[in-house]
Image (cartoon, rainbow, N blue to C red):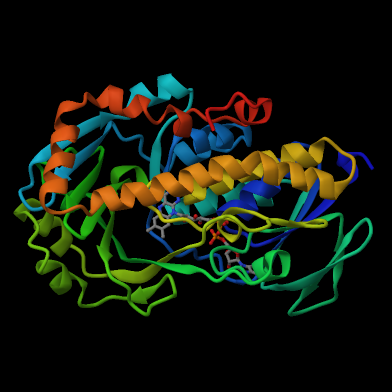
Length: 401
Ligand SMILES: Cc1cc2nc3c(=O)[nH]c(=O)nc-3n(C[C@H](O)[C@H](O)[C@H](O)COP(=O)(O)OP(=O)(O)OC[C@H]3O[C@@H](n4cnc5c(N)ncnc54)[C@H](O)[C@@H]3O)c2cc1C
């Protein structure tokens, strides 16, 4: 069968599922996306997308629409959260765009979903059905039967399970691999852009480091709002993404943040919290004509801001593999092979970042000294392997993956 005749089912209309549908359609394939939720209101606050993700969005033809609702930050400013002292400022903006041929953007997760959804709905080769949960599948010799909570089974040439962190399909593909609590809690909120203290660079990503905690904030909605994420050591019992955290500001007060940061945090009154989870990605992602993608395949910690970006990268690679035609299970196995090394590297780097962020005592002093003396461009060049990724370098094997 040539790839143009393929009809691919996708479970989940999140960042990974929608990106995959677009990627398949751009290769001339047909995609049927099934989303369990019937509403279109996406949870979440901010998301950062490095050039490794925005370069792929450009190929999908949606980068201009994404840019229209995003900010392109000038730099990443790192501060000591107790003293407020700026430790380092790494270049983003034109520097990273020119280096990697695509911008570093920050935006609201809802806006990214909306842009991807609009593009999907405008594409004749994609159908998107909301309010249908994929409950299982049966692999046949040359197809897969997809089962739902409502309605009849559907037959497809392949099923891509992009059903997120709490994937139900993961167990059917891989066996029993339970998520691991990362020992961190996350709190998020969005405040008006004008709440940002005037002596902080408005168009930067700011990271504040503290023993046992860190805070990240950056512009969303083209600077009209600021997304704030606070990550602390500990493990609440909140496993959803959207539990209200009414006492959050009081809890943060024990962390004794610098006045500047304290002012910003206390400007917010609607905090949501959840417990961070991960799963080392060393389990099978493919079973016959079914493949896991995005958080379903590789739930990682957010300390490198790469979860959504990796899902977008996955989309480009799985579509390119299927477009080569031939046996579906072999193409999906190629996708898995092409992604494993890179995903593991990002997974490990994110964990390391999380540890470095929360250092205390002499280790924190040493970290701060390194940050202060290494020039920003030198530090950023160390991440060429991350931000310089493209689908071509990945498949030609010369990617610094
Ligand atoms: C604090 C924090 C900050 C983050 N910051 C960043 C960042 O800056 N940059 C970045 O790239 N990433 C970031 N991420 C990660 C990013 O949000 C996720 O990695 C990304 O959303 C994964 O996309 P996905 O499509 O795999 O899953 P999701 O976006 O979660 O989508 C899964 C979809 O599947 C649906 N679904 C589930 N089960 C079924 C089923 N059985 N049938 C049908 N539909 C189903 C769900 O309703 C959902 O719509 C962050 C995460 C956290 C926790």
